[in-house]
Length: 393
Image (cartoon, rainbow, N blue to C red):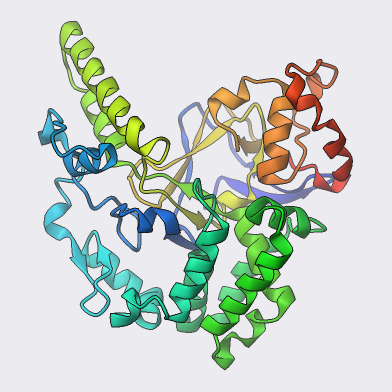
């Protein structure tokens, strides 16, 4: 039984409400995704991850050397490599050669979607309609990615292979409740200034890729726009970095102060080397749709956070502070650094990336604060494009 419920709150829409008291660091829930997929550009750049759960398929040494583009980089304490326990279990689909972290993931993928999604020898065929759709998307959506058209491709495979299509459609529809008079802003955020022309190109490529009669309900222009809006408003980024997992493990070792200082220097050096070549693209990141997590609203003073402690696509929601029964459970859509910036700065990022205006307690308390940077003042007029229906704190 869940210790929370989803309610409709006046002026806010759906929200997650605690049904018990939670203490700091207490797990509120764990959730597997409704669907997940690695980012298209990360696949193109060779980021090795399980095609089902996105667990890294590289050792920490392989990961660092690739990300730093330096085969001579050394990593100490390899006995604490988080991937080591999985290497012997790595496997692949015998037909298309897509890789998995274990036989369990391969079997689960086959059970849910890969039996119909497997492209066999056509996986490397640039003229295959699925690959054409993916390339069309990549030309419109350069890194850093926030979603992938391949998430919709996987949704179609899930639907085609599902034996409970009515239940699948009901769950898919649950992601739509926030998409009200927001489509144009969502498409603009995802695709840029020429989004209307690009949406048409994507739509045509999508229809070509899914020409079967069983997909007819998804192939009307409005249905495709709804799928894109679901992708734009609900997809959760997933980070599964083997390097960061290794750092967590070695940082917890019982070392002397001098040994810890030496290790910190090594870790800083590794991140510096990786940063010089890979920049911010460190993780085997992808995105997923989560039935529960997608119901949680944003706050600039969050009382919970979403984590990926298992280095795969299972999301774990933990309490950041004590939560009382009846409280709304909120997470932050912004990183810690951005949360410390001005209300104006936070609102600018939330408008541009999440298409809403935050009305959390912190934002309301800072409503009279002056703008802190002159370049942001030029965006004030943009606020007029957002009405009360866009509030989503």
